[in-house]
Image (tube, rainbow over all chains, first blue to last red; front, side, top):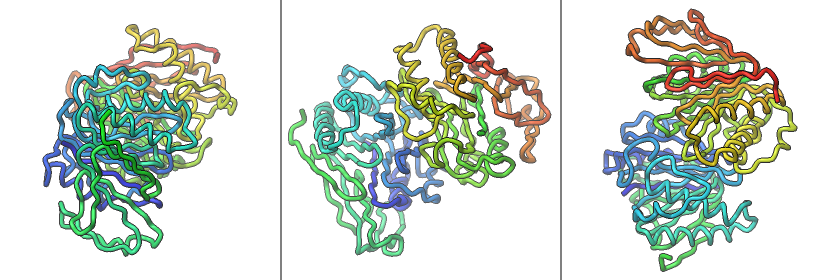
Length: 264
Length: 264
């Protein structure tokens, strides 16, 4: 299994603190030695870093910890490979363009190999993972249903939930997905989240001896939500997503949640 | 005007030396302060870095100089903005997926604004540059003509040359383009290239006091071609592309060259 990390914020925010915790799981406190990647949205543009090497001793990961890239929306992933070799092609997050937006996707779980029989129309995988195949299928479905970006985004949210439920029928499908403004988080087995806003307190990372006092790091109006496979801190209240639940974050706040109990 | 740098090699090769020269032009020895980007192919996967800040003092550019990422094909660009604001959306190289290949593109020059009336079918720009618009148009044309990757790549090369000539009818179109294996280089006004192979000698960068002895850095069978807006070294023989010329490199060697004297 892999580890996912997502962030949604109302002002450009650096993810150094959470990422410092996550990267320890890439070979140090966790078994996820098979590469890692992170995508930061700055405006509508995506800045992505990928490394097929373990994160805990990666010079690129070190750069990201030390060089505060500020972003509204972040998707990150560290990998413990199941389907597909350990190489750059197979390193999440994956991205494709639709409507002039760069969509980004990371997946935790494993899907039945019958997935590879599902027809792809517009987008083709570069690598060999079930994850990228699922992403290409999902993006093709969205493109076919919504040739243009819909005005009412809640219609899109329901559609994504229905397609994620279809993917869940093939196995474990925990997913983070974004087009820059909205962060879609779908849970089959394991995802946790919290929203930080005033009054800010102190947070203590579980995976490394790092404490941050958000009070001194933030402005009073800042709102930041963090979504992760496992809680990253041990002195904050993380909430657990249910099986079949889709949460959508926007500008740091939970914007919509929907749940279908059955995989379709 | 911007600066382009491309590399094609028969074995994974680092571009540290040439990149060290190029990045000096991003605000130190050249006026190109409006961001830079680089894409490395490793297998079919692209590892890309983008920074809207000047390259000569960028921590990410410094990382690339010091951390030898080995690649068969590289496309890099430093920007002096004309069309489109200075931000990450507008930072080259741009990329899109076709046939399960990630295509990458960088452009130097400026095209008439009537370009923005040319219809786009499949790919849409994320930013506002003429360059990304031209790339989306070109990729749409390739996709329409070749729904699948052609077996005979020379047919594709002729098609790309014809479409590049069409873009050249709108102004200055110097371009680097790749799908991972082939590096397409099209010239309107300014592109230079050389191929390094045994017997290797010493090279002296023009923009910074750096000398490399390729003899000690390479194996006897290595072949590496470098393509740049301006020659990067002052003690090697660089060749000049002609207006309307397309060179295609593969595995480090010049694979095809074609020339149409008229913009179409």
